[in-house]
Structures are given as C-alpha cells and as structure tokens.
Image 1 (cartoon, helix red, strand yellow):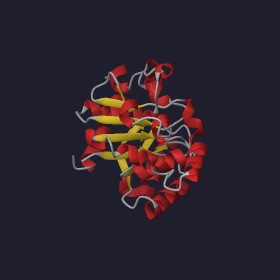
Image 2 (cartoon, rainbow, N blue to C red):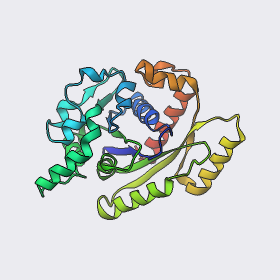
Image 3 (tube, rainbow, N blue to C red):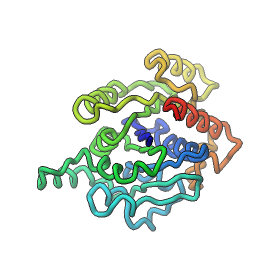
Image 4 (cartoon, rainbow, N blue to C red):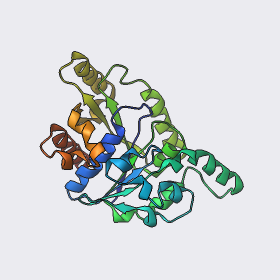
Amino acid sequence: MTKIISLVNQKGGVGKTTTSINLAASLGQMGKKTLLIDLDPQGNATTGLGIDKGAIKVSVYDVLTNRCPINDAIIKTKFKKLFILPATINLAGLDMELVGMEYNDPEFKKNEQLKKSLEQVSSNFDYIIIDCPPSLGLNTMNALVSSNSVLIPVQCEFFALEGVAQLLNTIIMTQTKLNPELTIEGVLLTLLDSRTNLGLEVVEQVRKFFGDKVFNTIIPRLIRLVEAPSHGEPICEYDPTCRATEAYLNLAKEVIERDGN
C-alpha cells in the first residue's frame, strides 16, 4: 500500500527540503519506488535532484490547475527508483488561481486538487514524499489533504519549537474537517551541531515535548550535506561515506519499520 508523507514546517531553514530530497532518495536506495513532489515555488527539491527547470514543459502547477494529467508531468530521475513531480516559479500564484477556479465552479475543491491527481498514480509507488513550502497556505493544505501522515523537521537551535503549536493546530483542523486519516509520522531533529550544549539541550527539549513521536535518527549539520544540492545529487550519491548518508538511510529504515513495510 502506498504511503504519502508530507514534510511540513512553516519555519524556513529547518532542513525540510534537504530531508525531502534525501529521504526520498534513501527510500529509493532501499528498493522502494518513490515519487518526490515539489510543492515549493522556489523549486529547490527540483534543482536539488539535477533537474533543469528551464527545460521543464509541464510541472505540478499544470497538474493542480487541470492543464495536464499528472503522468505527463512526472519525471524519472537518474537515481535508483526515484521520480519527481517538479515545481517552477509558476507555483507562486497558485493560491489566487485555485480560489478563482473554485469561485467560478462550485464543484471545484481547491484543497483537493493534489489528492484527485494522486489517486491516478499512487498505486504505482511505494512512497510519495511531498516537500511543502515554508507556509501553511493552500499548497500545504493540498498536501495535508492528500497525505497519510506528516513528518515535521525541527532544527536543533534556539526557538526550535517556535511555531510548532500553530502547525499542530493546522494538522488537527485538517484531521477534523478534511482528512480524518491524517497522522503524525514523526518529528525529525535536524542540523545538530553536537559540539554545542545548546544543540543537545534542544534534543532533550523536543524529545520531552513529542515523546516517542521523535525519530531516533538525528540529522547532523555538515558542509557536505549543504554542498550536495548544488551538484544536483542527494547526499547518498554525492558522498556515500558521509555521516549524513548514513543518517538518512537510517531515517528511511525507521520510516519503513513504522509503516510495517
């Protein structure tokens, strides 16, 4: 059965896109056919996998606005069992366009466009990973309505839990009104500098707040991890011996184990 996981945190700089890319690639490395959906208008997950945005003819924007079927927009990457539904800057105006489409057609549901499209292809994949923008707008709501679960990256820095209450309220609202099956997949600690006491204090704070929802895996702060997207590669390809490669493979194992796959 396909598992659809959205990576959500309205704070920027928490390692959300890095985790989306590397979790998806690691699941592929472990033999799971995986689709990565880039829902961020910046398109960093797209370029992070070596896709030339200038060469993209149709993207997730065209899918969500009914300009093309989802199969026409999915691209097979050069990495093992990994596919991507790319994003371009067109996605930046999606909110207004979807609201207008709903206004003109009462049958049109602006929050359900991605869900409707994924119903056509989800059975082709073991996992679908959705990289959401750093906001709780319409793009993110489409992701939450489509998903089985939410993975929340939390950086090991001061104010780590800032905004988390608002995110949890959004998840509860989605569960209540739009997607009762939505669960929290887990909370992932990212950007840990183990040389600092602050980082270790945040780990303890987050584990106390979320309990067993926190993954055992912690993603370290490493230069190699920052460099990899500029080369269009996930860390497992860019530097197979890097500690971050091991960390993301361990995260993929935890996700698979939690799903009973």
